[in-house]
Image (cartoon, rainbow, N blue to C red; front, top):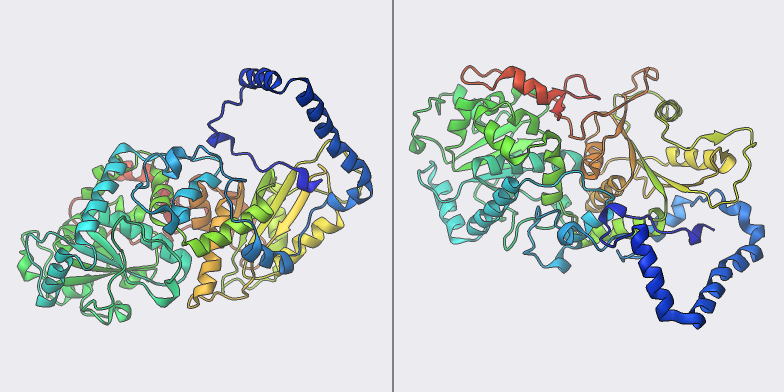
Length: 563
């Protein structure tokens, strides 16, 4: 019975007219073409499934709860499943998968399949890019192509960097992204840094480490975003809050001045900006208008962060108007920029599509549950699992169990639900599997439980671990409903790519909180530790700012964007 279910329909993406009138016309046309012999054949084909069903009735009970053991099927899903998209993706792909022009068509499709295919796997596209954003991205792509690594202008900028001081009228200015912490933090800061590059007309290059190899496709046409290995600053990964070249330390040591009349030639050739959860030592003046004028004069800016600092950019007056033009809908920032910038390589995308097509595509509803246990959480897995059940009862997420076994079987084909568990540990998957194996559900639905991997601990330094993590982020993003862990950047990316508002599992300290979870109002990620505003000059209108930048639903001290 399970194999007869139709593939998950992508009705929002279909171009064929499925109206009753169209179906009636098509039926008449088909009858005319087929005639009586064709009609006889159709009747025979229609009765064949019934004969098969009658012959296999003894296996009916074993198909009502459709479970797969992850320890066997995860391997089959990653390695051996179908890699075709025809069974899950509609022909209407929002301008060939470009999301209404968000993504440039000037790429070789085969080199990065996810760039044009990923949009086809989503049921809906909640936001389309503004015409201003599309033009801004095309302008940036031209700038990156002109100034990218190993171009004549890049080489000229390297000569300037080696000179020890900044220079006026340089054709190309750069912001270099420095990786820090886990994959979730890295994606959030990549998106934030790219937005900053767009706002300041800088070229973004990334310091790629070995654990990032094979994760992301090149996002810009005819150029690379990877900093060449012969970059003159060799200690870039060792820079920290104590380095003499941080913007804050250079100000405190009177190496530079934030006087708006400061001449470019008096500035060093580069500055390092530290924007991390370590608020006490961060470059808190980064978001001040007067300081941005100075920071913008550096030809090279090295940026280190582990935060989604986009909401804080809205506090800088010089960016206010431009941000409004780029993103009329405030909650669209991460969704649009992530779908533009972040594209899994073919090897990672293969993990996603094989698993999705093999196990998830046929489900009528897909429920993603992401469980992150932080080091400060000292309660047992049993307590966390009970919190998930309490949350599900409150928000009506999981299929309800028939504990008494009294629900009558419905003869019509039940709907199916797939539960995707994303966690470092197998325990939660095993609990869900046992729960739905031992009990039927009141609605007589097929219930499938899956977990692609369980690595036991975070291994950011290992490439294969990061590839699996990225694949699971995308699998989560293909779910219809998401329950994610509060404070988790992994969860932020999953629902941010999906473009849906998740249910947050509130952090457990000593007992399950009441309520156990909260439903998100905004689909934007949270800036977990925003810097306090210490600016003395021009500031944005506070009342207007607070209409769109508010406290996060899952983190009291965080801020995020709201429409």
